[in-house]
Amino acid sequence: MTRGDEVVRHALEWIGTPYRHQASCKGAGTDCLGLLRGIWREIHGQEPRAVPAYTADWAEPSGREVLLEAAQALLLAVDPGRHGPGDILLFRMRKGAVAKHLGILLKIGPEACFIHAYSGHGVVISPLSAPWRQKIAAVFRFP
Figure 1: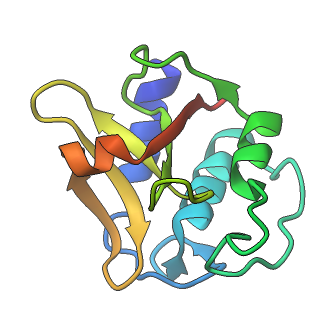
Figure 2 (figure 1 turned 45 degrees about the vertical axis):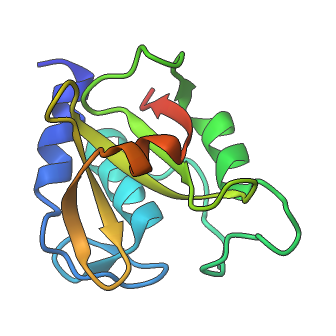
């Protein structure tokens, strides 16, 4: 089993977990970062660093790329177009805004989709449609 397959397997186990800001507990509640943190714990054990409290706007008013900077420090960057199942997609929800959402790529190709914890929906699978693809700010992989 590849690392990507392992990430996908773990991510699928979180489906249906309710959305809870700053939470990371499979079945009880999580946000998008909590989903990633939970998968990290399942693969690596202890998280690499404590996550400070954060607002839902992810530092948009200051313009600081908090989520992107953390991903660059802890994950492996993936060249554009070289992504595959299990990779982590960071999204800018608006053009020019900071990256503040993330998901795990499940499938590539014509039926591309990803799993994410989405406010108001919980952990779900969404098609990686053109509007979502246009929001991708960066792609990373678990070490």
